[in-house]
Amino acid sequence: NTSAKNIFFQVNSDKLLPQSFKALNDVVAVLNEDAALKLDIEGHTDISGGDKINVPLSKNRAKSVYDYITSKGINASRITSEGFASSRPIDDNKTAKGKALNRRVEMKLKYY
Image 1 (cartoon, rainbow, N blue to C red):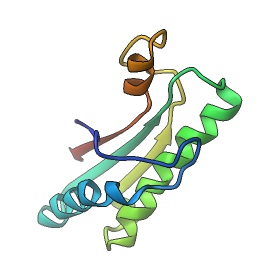
Image 2: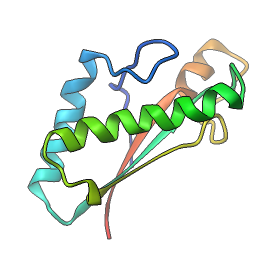
Image 3: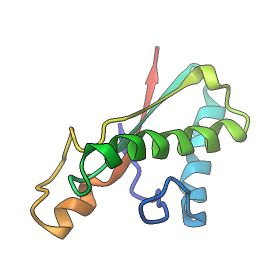
Image 4: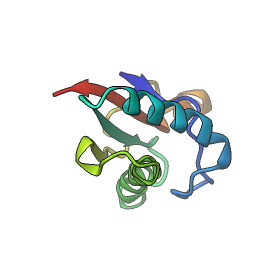
């Protein structure tokens, strides 16, 4: 269960920033080493903006990671992506630090 601390997006966008590529390539390498591994990708947001903005943003950010990993040759059948908006916070949404921690993409490697 990995919270990808090195996955970055443009503000209010699902566009991956180039500094994300090394961390994502590391995940691709792990998936290439073991064909039995599958990956669940989850997008999360803070509470700013409300669900009308955050639901699609969280889904689209998870999908951007999914698209990047499949573009590197990992079979799409091994990957799921879903957005959870602000429904699963890991910190308090009352502080800037807490909000920053809640804005994340989590990647979970699993054997099925």
